[in-house]
Length: 230
Image (cartoon, rainbow, N blue to C red; front, side, top):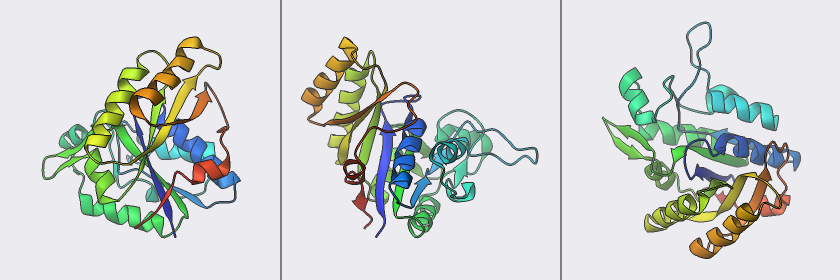
């Protein structure tokens, strides 16, 4: 039975793809057969033939060492580095939920642990034309629980608490928080951990120092974050 986990962030550029790569690498090193999936990916470069390169997928492959084909990883790839709903309005090819669902199911048939990465933060609009799809709609459609990636530094208390409270209000299960760009011994960052846990009731499971190439977490703790696919 395939197990799944959705990765969201407190905003853009908190390091979701980087942390996702470390997570998948850890699963692979623990003898699992992990896969990666992302519904919509913006801000990508083009190959010489004009086709778009799924940059986040490339990064995850390089970091983790998985051999999953890039073509499986993301059904909607856009060039413009804006929210997917706007990128598709500019470029065409708006996101359809049935396509996202089928791509997800195809990946789940091939891999035992599938990590799904979101676009931007939890409120990122995915389509706002033919369909109106928010990121939370994809999470619910696929029946996923979530891990929140946050920056360890200044401002994270506000960002973490608002993200968690929104997800609770929308009945989205939150499994825990990972702090990225963490500096061990930093008084403010250590306090951020305590305050975020106190104000949300959600545990900070891992802290990832800047430039880490390994995820310092027991494999069984990581795997316990994943749920069996319905």
